[in-house]
Image 1 (cartoon, one colour):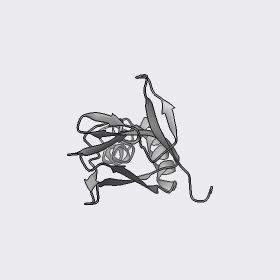
Image 2 (cartoon, rainbow, N blue to C red; image 1 turned 135 degrees about the vertical axis):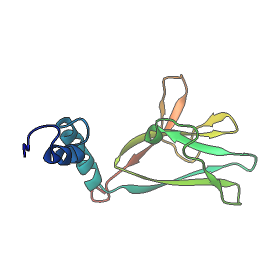
Image 3 (cartoon, rainbow, N blue to C red; image 1 turned 180 degrees about the vertical axis):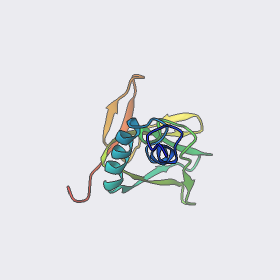
Image 4 (cartoon, rainbow, N blue to C red; image 1 turned 30 degrees about the vertical axis):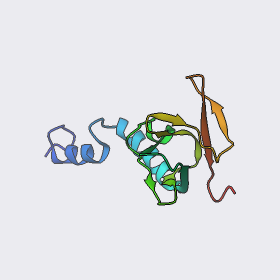
Length: 129
């Protein structure tokens, strides 16, 4: 049996572990392992509106996808969503009934490329403080 040829069982076993990109997949595996060792932290987002029909959370953490993070009403006029994020800084906004909103409860904002502002949150590793 030739263990080095692309058709051998050994080769397919290595390919399965490294992915279709071969040795390039090792870097991606190492990056995934490094991220997996970082503890994700729970971050709670709240948007208050008695009049909202729907609210979505969009930001760096979901590539500004306006549909992937719907928020749920809690019956008190607040819409809630919690995410588990790796330590870092994340810009975000709320999308409610077609209008974008910064987080009125968060004083941390920064300018964005549209000439308006985004809210941002800094997620720290619990060991860092």
